[in-house]
Image 1 (cartoon, rainbow, N blue to C red):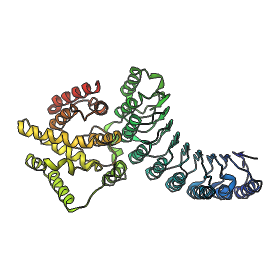
Image 2 (spheres, rainbow, N blue to C red; image 1 turned 90 degrees about the horizontal axis):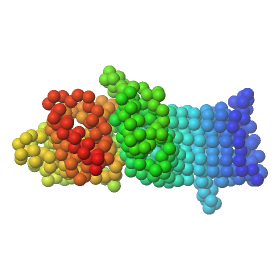
Image 3 (spheres, rainbow, N blue to C red; image 1 turned 90 degrees about the vertical axis):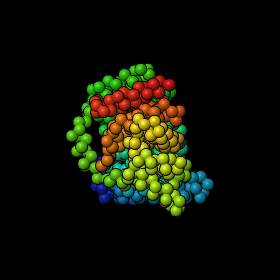
Image 4 (spheres, rainbow, N blue to C red; image 1 turned 180 degrees about the vertical axis):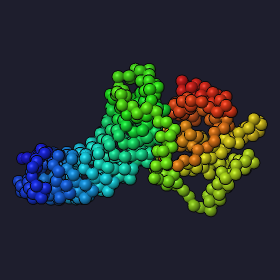
Amino acid sequence: MLQRCYWSDMFTGRLRSEIPTALMSLGAALTSAGSRLTELDLSDNAFGPDGVKGIEPLLKSASCHTLRELRLNNCGMGIGGGKILAEALTECHRQSSALGAPLRLRVFMAGRNRLENEGASALAKAFKSMGSLEEVHLPQNGINHAGVTALAAAMRHNPELRVVNLNDNTFTKRGALAMAHALRPLRNVQVINFGDCLVRSEGAVALAAVLREGLPALREVNLSFGEITEAAALVVAQAVADKPSMEKVDLNGNCLGEDGCEALRDLMENVDKGDLLASLSDDEGEPDEEEEEDSESEEDEATDEESEEDGDIVKENGLTREDSPSKSQSQAELLTFLRCPSVEKLRELKAALQEQVQTSELHQAAEVLLQIASLYGEDPETKNSVLQAFDEVLKKLLSGSVLHSYCVLSTLLVRMGLLKGEGKVKKASVSPGHLLCLEHAVQQDVFSPHHASLLFAFTSRIREAPPSCRGASEKLNAALEKKCKH
């Protein structure tokens, strides 16, 4: 009985109008012969959406109830073809499930097909219903954060996933956060290929949290050509350093600069993993300030929209916004404090401050920390009130998963101007109080060594602190370095 059809590059020189009819005839022959396919490869046949219609009857038939591997690379499917394919796979799964033997597709490849967001989102629904995927390859499909987020949601429902290849799509921060959240519970992932996906530094930090927290079987990670800066690359390297099965870390083509490349090599050598690091020969060099400003001005997503979506992505443990009158009143008091902070208002809020700060509202949480720290003074009573409030809020924000705590710290770093964020972000005017509050918090038990490593990667690379902040900056870095060694 026929089980494998290797039909790649089969229609060279044929008119596109002839291909759907030929595919229908081939499919009909397989169905009438009672074939039970396990592999179907139609890669490198430029048949477009009409070609997908040609294989649609076959994919819906009993001949594909046993399908384990489907390869459709470089077929020009487009959005329309992606939707037809998704509907066919969903129907195949529905019919096979009704017969007691559901479709268990393990390998899906559809690179270079111009699926874009709509096609990817349609396929994501099919992936979610199947729940059996072990490899997903969708490189070069023009998918941006909306499609990536849909695919990420589907990944969570495929617990046996081993390989995720989304090379050369466009994640940005939102897509990277969604994918990090999706990867977190998966235990069998061995290969992550997000190269040339514009992950950027914030996205890299989020993915680093997942690398540190989970993915015990990971062998390869590719975050090349993602506009990742030196500090974020070091955080990623630190996160994979203890992976026992690690074979390759690719951070080539990012924005490290000569010193950054050297620092990355040194870090990997110091943990006896230098041979795992891929070449850095195509590094883009450090972005200068003009490039960063241009990049920020070109962003077309508003920060308010990003913060709302980011909150949804990192929301954990059933935490939601409550609209009860008491909650609304508490939030009103908090907003009043943020608009016009004072030590007196801080003392009034002190008892309820922890409760009022929403862990899912990352930008507001960072603003709360910054406003509290701005009140720092050497008067003992003021100093104690500020440090205690700062520590209590930070304790709540860092008490969730590693992913959530890294998102909190990266948001704080963005607001302090130490990490380049996406969109127009209002940067705080950093004062010694901000740094001294962090220095005190670092010494508390809630602040773990890996949290300190994350902060130190960024704070230690400040080229020249303002004169008023130099002493505080030195104290903070000393405390971070000490905590990193614990």
